[in-house]
Amino acid sequence: MSTNEVNEHVLAAGNKSGQVFTLLTEAAARWPERPAVTYQGVTQTWHETLLRCRAQASVFAQAGIERGDRVAYLGFNSNVCFEGYFAPPAIGAVFVPLNFRLAIGELIECLDDCTPRLLICEPAFYSQALALLEACASVSCVFVTGSALDFDNAKRHGVEINGVTQSLPDEMRSLEASIAEIIAGASVADMQPSSFEETLILFYTGGTTGRSKGVMLSNKNFLCNTSGSVPLYKMQDCWCFLIVGPLFHIAAGARIFSCAVLGGHAIILPKFDVPEVLESIANYRINSATLVPTMFQMLIDNPLFATADLSSMQMVASGAAPMPMALQHRVIEAFAGINLYQTYGMTEAAPIVTSLDSQYHVVSGPGSEKLGSVGRPAPHVQLRIIDEQGADLPPGETGEVLARGDNIMTGYWNLPEQTAVALKDGWYHTGDAGYIDADGFLFLEGRVKDMIVSGGENIYPIEIENVLSSHPAVHQCAVIGVPHETWGEAVHAVILLDDAVSEAPTERELITYCREKIATYKCPVSVSFRSEPMPLSPINKILKTELRKPFWEGRSSALV
Image (cartoon, rainbow, N blue to C red; front, side):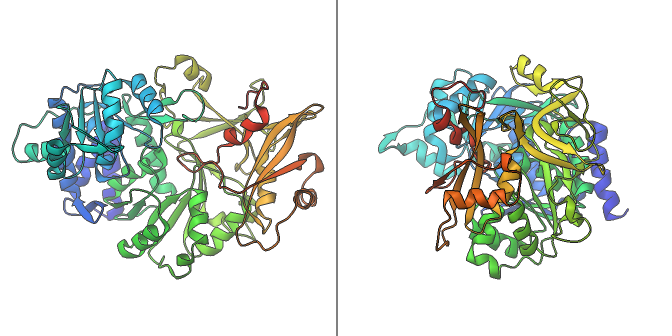
């Protein structure tokens, strides 16, 4: 059997069983000694990973976790978080990776919503874990990751939190000690993984305004996405994947399943750090990475990039936010010889909707006219563009993007009304505005809610942002709608200038620059300059809501 046939067999076995856990058992059976995960210099094989996941599932079962219960994780990227994508679902439980950047009140809100019976936390989050244990009635047990010896010391002497030593309650236990006990011969629970339609993972999205939404993703959703993404990105057997995006976000998490199908090796970094990323690529001979536009810019801008060894890299995907055209040109030049993909997706789609193939990542010549698009639908996805009345629009006309496929979420946890708004007749309403050209390529125009209505004209910020980003003095920009007494809204640009600029452009100069390239009615009528970086979400998207607030304070607007 050829290598590709083996990879296909692993995926087929998962699809046949309807269980993502099968991908792990098949990988461990076929490539037991291949490296699966490396974290902080320690590597574990696929066989060891399976043993650890079974042991964790048994630990959870002994702690009273039953089918359908939630198991939450609070911590940085780690091997334990990687294992969380398999271990709780092995006994039918639901894994909930939490955004560690949330304030304690927001974390409490998430846990009160999904009511996990068990929390896994890293030692760096003792303070939050103690607060959650006290505030959230559902949490009866907290397993702490890291060295069992370190946990014993913390248990014996307490931990210092805000200058005060606090003792650890009996509800806190060492996860590693519990795993070791199971592997050493204690009773192993019966593995009864969650089924095809059952929820596998619950991802919380948002949290910057209003209530976070828990997105329910099933085995079906992830198996569909994995079946599509492996051939879509031309992934190969035994690839080495760099996982540097947060694993509480699906863009990073979904790669775990691709890694299992290929018998690959995941190099997990706790957070994005340019020197560590470049060092890991060179030392581990990384083949693939998924980055957001901000990460690309940070890499290229760093002096270390000029001498970095990228010779092992075969594929780099961009996602989570649109990439300005000026940055795309820089990335194409900087990553010459490496297959580049731009992906459009969202948590609700597990996550891939469309992808722009590497052949269209060219600045000039055949195919370059597609560079501003996010590509064609993934193999498992259907697309529609509709107007405000729900009627289908022809090629070239802008409306809301709808997607359908087995990758689309089950719904939002405990939010039936919001689920009904988002899912209609099997179609997911993305809230994104865009159009499909005659060749089937999707061009995004921004969020429907980001659309600026000025004097009756619909204006999409991304077009203006692409123009501003091409100005040599502009490091970062965001275009928003601000109140206007006559037009309703006016176009306003928020600019962060490049530090290296010797002579800063004026507001008038930037407006004129735009007017030379796009229609006058689309151009900013005002510009503000920031001295600090743009406010970013945990996945490095610019938080336009935060930028709008000062302008809309005291006014009625659905945008804020």
